[in-house]
Amino acid sequence: MSDFALSAEAREWIYKNIPEGSIICEYGSGAGSAILAERYKMYCVENDLEWVGKYSKINYIYSKLKQHKAVKGFDADVWYTPSDLEHLKELDVSLFIIDGPKGGHGYGQSGRQGALKYFDLFKPGVPLLLDDVHRGAEKKLAIKLSARMKTPVTFHATWTDKHFAIIQPEKSI
Image (cartoon, rainbow, N blue to C red; front, side):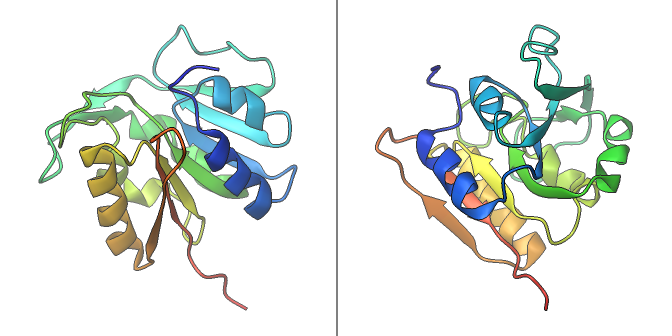
């Protein structure tokens, strides 16, 4: 499996916390998405046409990257086209994974900070898994999303140093 795929530890967290057959929406896609598609209904937002349709069990949503004003504290100024993603709010999503779009790997350089700018596209109360939080920009994004959601973030280290974070809102009774 590629070094860029979602880690085995992140997949194990999903298996333990998200019921099999649930809908997962992932921003970005890869080999890890295909593994998850064996147990879950996967919707992957993808801007790279080379990845769209790569795995037959994934529902791909092609979305070109759109330039926007950079989020304060971040360098990148592109994210998926918001109008391509509006219908995702209508799905009964059990988990959002933020693992794209790819960007630079320096502090502040990530294409993923658009999740802050277009936060209203995420269904309230649904957990977020952020991949690659061993990188400065992704860790900073996790902290800012956690504050936005008023929910603590939990950072998970892995044996490969490819860390992930979970922001899991409490379920209301």
